[in-house]
Amino acid sequence: MAEITTQMIKELREKTGAGIVECKKALVEANGDMAKAEEILRKKGAAKAAKKAERATAEGAVFAYIHAGGKVGALVELSCETDFVARNETFKELGHEIALQVAAMAPEYVSREEVPQEVVEKEKEILREQALKEGKPENIVERIVEGRLNKFFSEKCLLDQPWIKDDSKTIKDLLTDYITKLGENIKVKRFARFEVGK
Image (cartoon, rainbow, N blue to C red; front, side, top):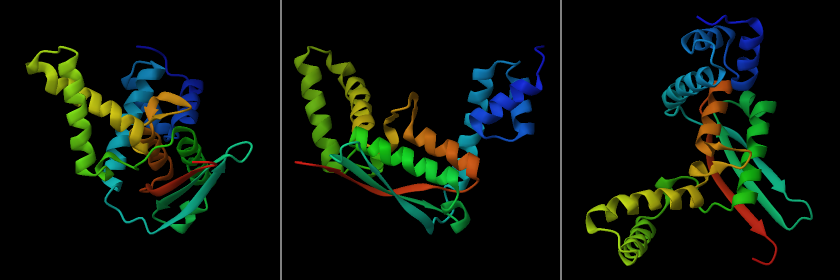
């Protein structure tokens, strides 16, 4: 059994924002493996975030990011449950990160649920034709289409996009981390991206 030091708990707490007791439990469960403990906390955070997902988000703020030179900008409306969290620095930090993501990666939708069904069907049709042209056997074409459709979502939908600062996380994962840290439901309501000449 690996020794769990105060320094390890402190480090894990700084990385995840979880409480001291939760960090210690996760490190014990992971036998001192920091990465594994982080994953355990992320899964617990995701479960907590799912419970909070039903709660109303009537407060929030609008965040802006303008890229150097003023050629690209983004506005993001982020909602939360209370005015207290809306004014919190951690919430503002998240708003900035998401506005930066929108400016850099130009998503078209917040989530895959927002993509119109006809757009999804058209994309499936194109991907099916591509797979058949590549000579893929008929019986695995559907699986290929599903895989490529997920790639389409990860390019077009903000919540599915890999975070530009850590591509091991999606924006949905980032949101979950902040929901865990702040203890409130948080949603990306909408965004707009502007680019000079487009």
